[in-house]
Length: 301
Length: 318
Image (cartoon, rainbow over all chains, first blue to last red):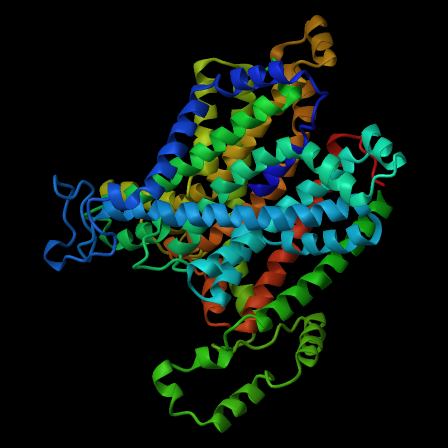
């Protein structure tokens, strides 16, 4: 998936500058022009709202067990029923959004900064710097992302911090390769040459000119990456690696509910649906951003 | 062309070499000890330090990392991947027993995804903005974001528990009981095929839409060719170029997904081996499996690059 996004984003390129006002208007028109994108924005807003205000929204504490009320069917008191320990499923889903959001944001933040820096150095300096960095990235890319995260995470042991480390390492190659490709393209522009001829230092050229010109497609990549990180984290916790109960995580909830599938399928289905909805939303918004930022597609979509 | 293949192979060898170093050093730098995982925690206090040292010696874990690495690489060149710490069995043998299962499952899923995904994308492009396009586009957008563990569980609920059409889980070799084996494979294959299918349908649609606007397609129309001929003979070959990249990605996702799917459906393939051996810090297994996966994916990427040249002779290998 990561590579897919990288390909689509790289393929886009950035067009010539158009006056700022019309640019923004056009962006807004294209971006908000699709129902699915608006729906995606709403889902993401709700998701973030839910994560921030979880204690106010959740009817019960997520780790509170009530052994006299185990495996309840959905009712007025427990809208989505209770699990095998009598914990309220809805409350656990609401708190689970915190786990997803925190992990999603930290992983995207860390891997983006590290990956971008590596890609920038590799693309800008070229030669041996690029060879060493990119061969290392190639080595990491020889594994499916989820597999890399799984192995690192399982070796490090469970816990939020370790999952974040594992997923960040797994995500770095995508950013690095993307950024390297972008920089190679951007640095051929005349304005970079102009800067250099005026005596600008490498650092200044990179930060003031190369990075800003790589940003638009990077924003698209980040949006989509948020979705894939959340998906990957859910996959790991489903396998019992990373975030394990009693901490609420959507993936592990799906797995817990598996045993009660014949009698109480909602235990597995509800948290899985939450994962899908959020990932879908991030992907749709990413798609929308790409269409809006990508001049090549102007007028066609 | 030949120079390109040789260069790519040499580059692959370099990358594989880096892979072995990263994996080997990485596993030993991270916390955890395979010997401690071998013995139940309750018995660990009974073991003297001497016994633990002896066990370590037995598996060669007391030697310097660099010596262990050289031994491992030396073994690899002879097809020997070492001995499992947990099972005390040769790693290569176990991997060879499980690999065909994962490959059978994965390649079936890949074929299903390709055979359905590309025509679905073409259909969308041809019937742009008609109901069938909206339907397939929406489904494929859902497909690329679907958590496969969730899909797997929903299918078990629906097809096995509710409709009672398919067995809940399990694996039987197609050579012992073909019908049972196929019934057991339906759900895992669907789960694994969803991503390649959806991503290929999406990509085929958008690249076909682009190709259909090219001048040579207009020329073909004006020559009076039928839609069928134009799409199959003229548009598809160019439209497929970006899709080929996804083939490599799809296979990589299938390998990753098989870790989850083999757990859900209780299939004794490579994927489950990765989980159990990583949790147990069984170094030889993890190293072996990861190496096999890396070789496989790099081979697929090489094929993808070669397919580019076949589909688009304008691409020059340099």
